[in-house]
Length: 284
Ligand code: AMP
Image (cartoon, rainbow, N blue to C red; front, side, top):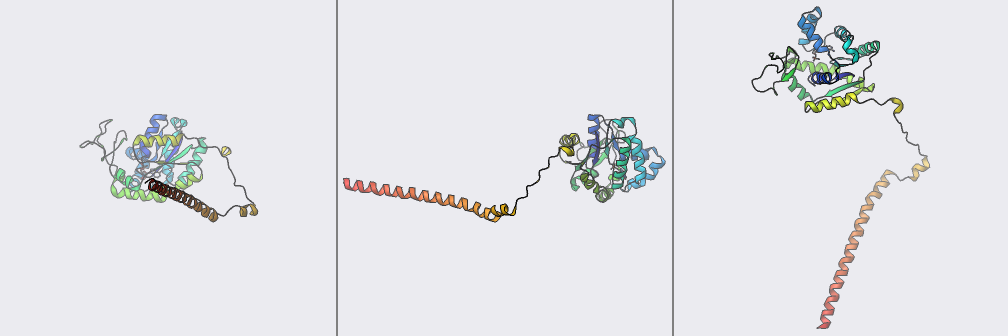
């Protein structure tokens, strides 16, 4: 399984990537996590990236590409990968394409998690993250008073870039720089759009289905071409307007026939009643 996950911040890429990783044993490769790890370790690269990340902007392509290149070269990624958050613009997509060619690991599919903007804002502003294992929670779904991770008990925190003003910036950056990738991958025939709202399990099922569906090889696609009719044949065939009139006339005729039949029945009943009256009068 070699897939790229596209989607706005808060669309659930990370959550779904973790689930795919657990089920299929292929690593989630998240550019955001790689950057956050560099920040936490206080590396030179991390120091450079931190302020850019905190402002909701994109870190420079060469920094991110370097991290992704090193990560995809690790042995566990030889079995496949789930790319989460990379690429984020067209240049990164082209660099990724070149890197995967070099590694002999072409992408199987690009899945785009489709989520409405109001849902994204609600999810991002309410998001709380575990600093130890990276598990993600939301204040709207946590039981009242709970603020620790259910897996390791660590105190949950709000990522600096999940603060409301930064969220707005990240969504704007997504719209201008990342969204063009949807058309890019669609033109390449690799894009599959997955409805990203609703129950987590249901979204996961849709993700799996989209990830595992085999693309139809070009030679198996049956193309039917329309026969070109001669002008004489075209004239012979009734014009759509005439056809429509005919179609309209049909039910009218049917209705007229029905009314006539009803009238006949009524006439017969009246005649029969009159006859009965005359017979009765004669008997008297
Ligand atoms: P994420 O966890 O994917 O939402 O990423 C958090 C932040 O890391 C983003 O807002 C960017 O500042 C930075 N980042 C993550 N992935 C990339 C990328 N592919 N290119 C540039 N910056 C990135």
